[in-house]
Amino acid sequence: MTRRIVLLGPPGAGKGTQAARVSTDFAIPHISTGDLFRVEIAAGSELGMKAKGFMDAGDLVPDEIVLDMLSARISEPDVASGFLLDGFPRTAAQAEALESRFEGGAIDLAVLLEVEEEELVTRLSGRWVCSNPKCSGVFHVVYSPPIVEGICDACGAALVQRNDDKPEAIRRRLEEYASKTSAVIDFYEARGELVRVDSSGSVEDVAGRIESAIDNAIPA
Ligand code: AP5
Image 1: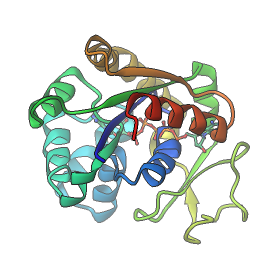
Image 2 (image 1 turned 60 degrees about the vertical axis):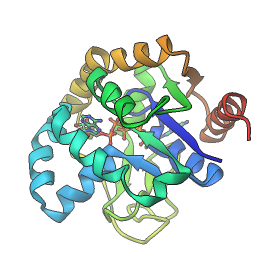
Image 3 (image 1 turned 180 degrees about the horizontal axis):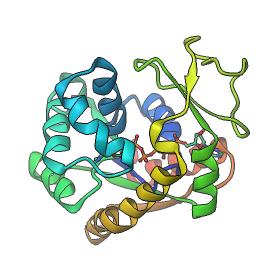
Image 4 (image 1 turned 45 degrees about the vertical axis):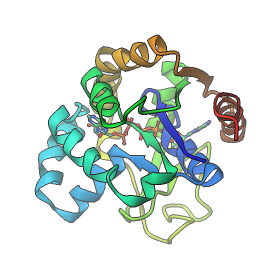
């Protein structure tokens, strides 16, 4: 069966952590616009260079750049089984553009992960990510430390902190989320497609809540 799901939530809510599980459990590709940009930046492409300055500062990348990249990705054949979008859409214009790509409704469900702001800052400040752009390893110095300090459990590459996990960029990202992404929440709520999930507590507890929300909204 086809499942088209959007995972929404503020920076640090656990979208990437949970998306990896949902993608495996429901056999749908995980498409993260942040990850797509980071691959382009690592490759030194023109697209990556255009996005880098915005990302490092904690600003959203302009819609036209995001939409070109996302449009190309959702034209690939694996999307026939559905998709899990992580970090997209982030503006009303992006949500409307996605809608216009699919006749009869673009998505089955938007899952909004909710966490207190203080916890978001704790999660982001302690995050370490794999430096290998093809690996999506994400760790936390306290909540989910790697087996060997500084080394990715999955691929053995060095762990690094993201440029946008510095305090000033975290603050800016939270502002961008509050000012621009609330319109996306309203968009899906008005269509009756939004479910809110408490993303506090352990990774396993949150995963269970998300899975139940998906099973309830899109029965197999
Ligand atoms: P993006 O990469 O999407 O970043 P983000 O939305 O800010 O989200 P994060 O990746 O920081 O957090 P997350 O929710 O995935 O949390 P994670 O699972 O890692 O975007 C980056 C930038 O790209 C944007 O700022 C923008 O510039 C640009 N961009 C991307 N998409 C765009 C778009 N559509 N339009 C315009 N610009 C765009 O978890 C965080 C930490 O917490 C980890 O250390 C993890 O181990 C830990 N953790 C997770 N869950 C738990 C838990 N339950 N308990 C304890 N710790 C936990």
